[in-house]
Structure formats: C-alpha cells, structure tokens
Amino acid sequence: NAGVTQTPKFQVLKTGQSMTLQCAQDMNHNSMYWYRQDPGMGLRLIYYSASEGTTDKGEVPNGYNVSRLNKREFSLRLESAAPSQTSVYFCASSGKETLGGRRHEQFFGPGTRLTVL
Amino acid sequence: DQQVKQNSPSLSVQEGRISILNCDYTNSMFDYFLWYKKYPAEGPTFLISISSIKDKNEDGRFTVFLNKSAKHLSLHIVPSQPGDSAVYFCAAGGDMRFGAGTRLTVKP
Image 1 (spheres, rainbow over the protein chains, first blue to last red):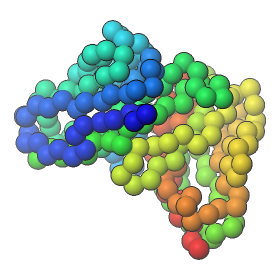
Image 2: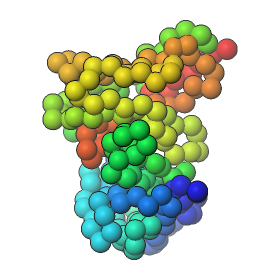
Image 3: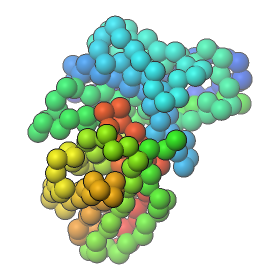
Image 4: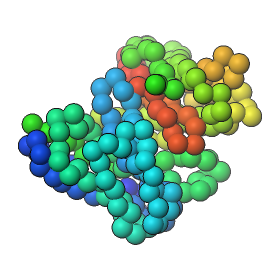
C-alpha cells in the first residue's frame, strides 16, 4: 500500500499561472482533505470531501478549487496563483473508523512545496 | 481566529527525561483531540488521541491528558528519545483544527 501520494513534490510558479496538485489514496477512505502549512500557522484546511461527489469549503478556500474525481483522487487547483499561496500543501484521507476505533485519524501525503514568484 | 493554540514554538529536553507539550483550545464543543508528529519533508503522522469523555489516554511512552474545564491538553513523552525530535501538532474537533506546532528537540 502506498497510502496517500501527492504530485508534484516541488513546483515554482509565476504570479497568474495556474496549476493542479494531484492526490490519490489507496486505503478506500471516504474522506479526503487539502491543507496548507505556513510558518507559525500550523495546518489550515482549504477544502475537504466527505465522500465521492461532495466537496466543502474549509478555513481558507479563497483562490482554490477542488475536484473529487473518484473515491481515490482529490485534486486542488490554483486558477491564478498569487505569492500569498506560497506554502506547503498536504493532502490527507480518513475512513469512518480506523484501526483501533480511532475516529478522525487522518493519513497524510508527503506534501507539495509550492513557491509563487 | 485560532481555536487551537500551542504557545510554545520549541522545547528542548535531555534524553531519558520527560517531554511535556501543551495545547489550549477555545471551543468547548470539541469532542475529540489528536496529536500528530511531523518529521522534515514528510507529512504528519498520527500519534495518539483522546475523546472528551476521558481525561487520560496512554500508548507506550506517550500519554495525553485532557482538562476540559481548563480547555487544555498535554502530551507527555517518557522517557524521551532522540528519535522523538520532530514537530508535534495538536488537533481538535471533527473538522480538525490544528495548532501551530511545537518543535521538540531531544538531546543525547
């Protein structure tokens, strides 16, 4: 099992460019999430998807769109990148009940480091 | 509006001693709390959790304590090992509000 995979690992964009961050999980989880991590801010939820076909806004959705392509894949799109979107982006997934009955435990991918110039 | 706060950005302890990481929250509706550990260039990994119906949960060297009246939780690591050096995040609630993290350094 690969767990949660993210591509690309690194990306540099110019202001105004667009790109899509890809995320896939092979754990048959219903829920998937996109976070950004900034220094001193912890992880902040951008969007989440509780099940295939549904998406909802998190704390910081402005400037982003998402697509839950199927149960496995959840992509994050920046339509017109801005320097304020320079961050490390993490995708995560969770099942309804995980091993040992641990609710809400999320499994994270390795992250995408994005720089917008 | 940070609903989960980790006020200590860093903590340094000697190998074999106890590490205590603290977390405060403001939303009394939070009913579940988790601690994650993060190494550089990796995603966070789950460490331990606690439900609001409990005040303590233990897993090997790791114990989480919850004080609901103070809206405070803490993670105790005993004994601390150099491999525990990482950033620790607390998270709370169904939509997982994260604290800013505490960088723990365990010195040999």
